[in-house]
Image (cartoon, rainbow, N blue to C red; front, side):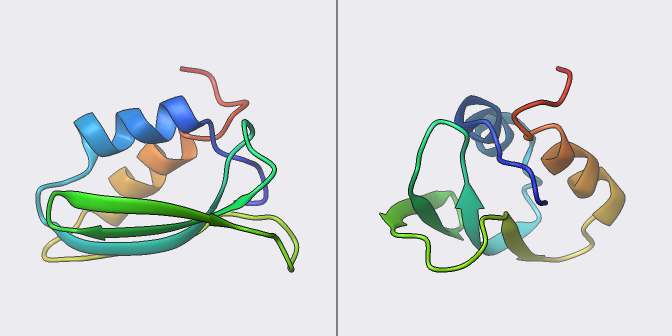
Length: 87
């Protein structure tokens, strides 16, 4: 997305919505609450979030790797992570 995520909403996605069929995920994340770029890695139930300086245009880019994933549901869930989305 070209809009920032809400850190709280993304955390909710990870804690309550992400499919158990997702094995790995990677991404570059932009949060409204931070000026930094966040590098996201997920493997199984463990994830890490490291920060760095932006050297490109700010945006969110994420890849989910799994089996039999419902792409539209995931897109909808991630869309609700946007800072200005309605809960």
